[in-house]
Image (cartoon, rainbow, N blue to C red; front, side, top):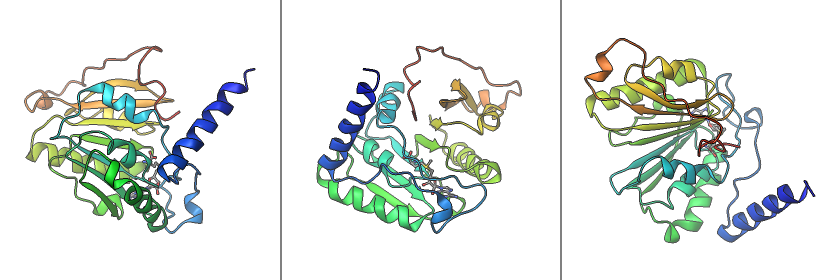
Length: 227
Ligand SMILES: C[S@@+](CC[C@H](N)C(=O)[O-])C[C@H]1O[C@@H](n2cnc3c(N)ncnc32)[C@H](O)[C@@H]1O
């Protein structure tokens, strides 16, 4: 009996991919691709429910811009583009994965709510964080210096154009680095699941004490992120 639920879920996901002509499910080891580097992580897609949970964090409006840092085969780009974002951007280092993402998106463009979808094939270190980005998404795409430099780019963009930015980080290996940022507050942190962060007001960011943390318990609506 306990086997029935996972089997049903697998069948439902398979049918969903078939319906939209998507190819996002199979994981890929980066060593087998064109982009292997120590700080880069393998391709594993986010769970299908992730975007639904993100949409529960705050209302998504037509001024919002979503960026998936390390967008892989484009599952999150596809899911985000079902919401009324002004723009959805995916940046992916592997050309092989990027081309799969392009095929996934182009098959579905007419039926996606967001019409401005940009897939960029480049190393995030070369990518300019858009000054209107309001949602940044990471599914443990890279660690170490790469992660820190991307966080610094987000900070610089926010400082030049102050705005509310929500960062959702599935499998938050680099949580401690984000928790140390005075310009961010930790809304939620479950080390095995997700970290959620939000920019503070500009004045608040100059205060040197650590950011306020709101830790939510096991009934958190985002617990299933990335599962
Ligand atoms: C765990 S997968 C997540 C895929 C997608 N975001 C999702 O949630 O379904 C991480 C992705 O980050 C990409 N990646 C790793 N290092 C990168 C870098 N330096 N620049 C851009 N993408 C990178 C990998 O190729 C991989 O596709």
